[in-house]
Image (cartoon, rainbow, N blue to C red; front, side, top):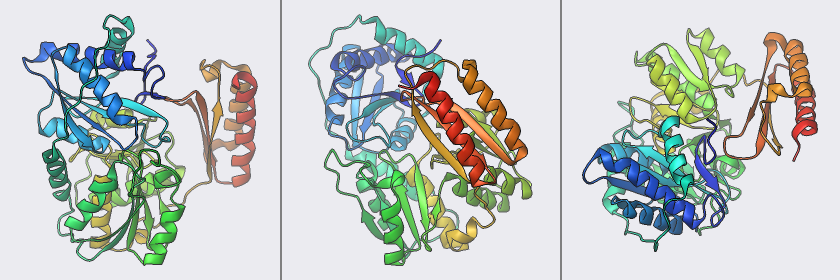
Length: 445
């Protein structure tokens, strides 16, 4: 059954409008509370948020809904998405809620739900919750809220400090952190300063509306310039909820999730800690990553786009390293979700131990790749559209083994995504244009 509310990363929308209107938020909290109530006498739910101005109000509606079902809400205040996932497990909460729209602009927001395991609820659980929410049985009451517990931040930072690679010291290492005016604005600098690093923090002054605004992982140009100007060893760009991290080497080179996976796979292989002999990524991972891993005796396994699907494949195959090109990296021996701060600790450790990031990703040839978003009015199976199917077949034949094409819908927006990758840039341009035109003709909004 196709879900109406939950996408690949929770419920997304514009605050005040369905599905982030007060009544639906209250029913979401109430449905979650009733789902948890049979599991124990006194369930507790941890709620955290990023820095969007709409966060506290949304949190209050959810907390009120939980209270209507007899479930207590505990506030973590402004904290990263993976911070909530970690604390839910560590502090034995019944569930966790994160109020964030990740890398989206401030005027969007969202609700992400985590089970007591620290993992996102399975699809079938989200379907049950959705049916309850959409039934409309509960009318909202006055919103409530609780003060944030500062001990939760301390527990999360203590966990992160313990994830340095053995033998690594960050003492005196100069780092530039682009906090995206988001959830990492305070935790990121505090973490790395406590590890002895010389931290230059940028975009660390959130005002409720500047989250992700020309900064962070979607706009790393300013970070690249600052890393070179500061002569820093490393730059890190987080997104709004800090579940992803991209890196800038000392030379100013951008290193995305593909490069991070390669560097960490090489390290874990060298220490005999890489489980299953494979790295898990998604259909969007660059062909260059697949080829360099193969040359070093490692396989790349591709899952559907979305960190939940990467995690499912890792659990299925007994693997401990996986992630996405966008910078969500899962170190399953340490955490159940992608965590930008954790990833930054690992990569900074690796640079301290083994030298500049440029060297750690040496040999990664990035194939030309283009991703285009096409606004659509509906989402029928793309293969069911004759012109799209014909163009895709023609492009696939033409590229052969020298390229890849991925067509899919966004899980959170009314968009189709067209990814074309090939050895020659002109092939990328040609087939991207052809596929985008075919989709626009069939479904253009």
